[in-house]
Length: 472
Image (cartoon, rainbow, N blue to C red; front, side, top):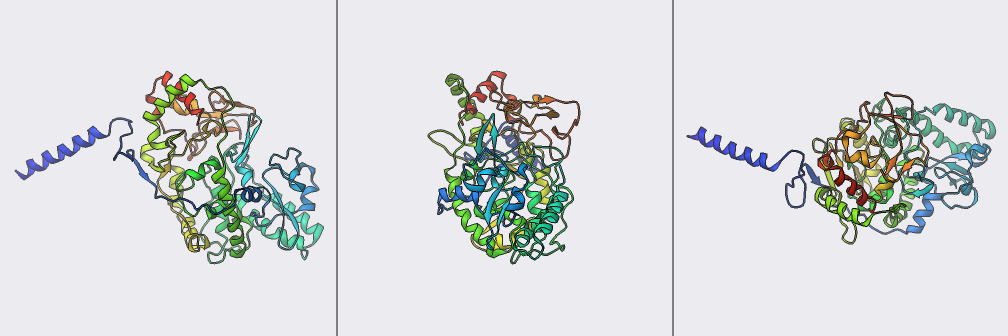
């Protein structure tokens, strides 16, 4: 009798599960949270800074922590530009967005980079957009030798007892130690975490001082790069980074580039105080408007598709905006798991971070990796190609129809080659790994599978959905 009762109970539970999870549909576990997701803890950032000062600090500030003496840097004309995309003054007006000129505490003028805008600004069809993730960068070369040449030149010009050498030393030391670990397999993907992971391994947790060749943990020989997310999404998020591992205070998380050259926690605290203003600027930063034409009737139809299939994970837009801040399990979204797995397996970095000044002093931040990816807000999605966390899909049309996604695709890396209708980069399909401009989705960490939810839609439904996405 007990066996029969247990069998009936098991059958009933199994039927409930099967009726609940059907095919590829997104069925909610409760009215608020879709199946296979979990809500991130509420983490609203305080708004105590000055947005204008934050904008100025990003364009001219000293958060790099060190740099190349200005006289040495500007003696090479190839380092200079007349575009002045960030509308700066003085020597900064002649520098590309990825470099800032500033004075060290000693008074020595230096040029430091790559700054936040080196990775978080770029062009689309000639339009320069501050805050846009720059997918045109090239991290395929080991430039450690270049640092050694610069080091030799500065030592030869100024001498090792000079204030110019002191201003450069921490920057050069950090660059040489980290660059070998930031080499990517092809252009367009970013090694930001590889840089941070290699840098902090050389630092003491208690005061961030450089620990010489002794490292806190073995630095992995290879890391996995990612696409660069746009900065205007930060204000909607409860956690930063694709796997949601950046928890707590955003000002400390956002100043990660400082770990290459910052001297100690005294300087880190000074930089962090300025990043309160940076966070205020991010609160004001808006996504760029789609520059082409939008068909209102098609967009209205697309909005209905979006509401039915996309809104539960990616949020509402328009007059009643909301964003659910959901972490989606790898098994649910199906995208390449290697990036999320990497941080779960290489937990030493997170442990270092949480035991360091970043995690122990107020305002506290935390590194908490997980086996999932955050479903991002979609503001300004038209400009943010390529797509998925690893930048493996060249345009939105391909994202919405996984059968179209190319295994090997090559682009020109010219900002003018952007397709506004497909909302992404123009590309050619290649038969194999042609060169460093070819995205190879067969490499571990760079697969283009998953996020197939829109495959169920008809061609017409995808067409109108694309039209609506132009409005976000």
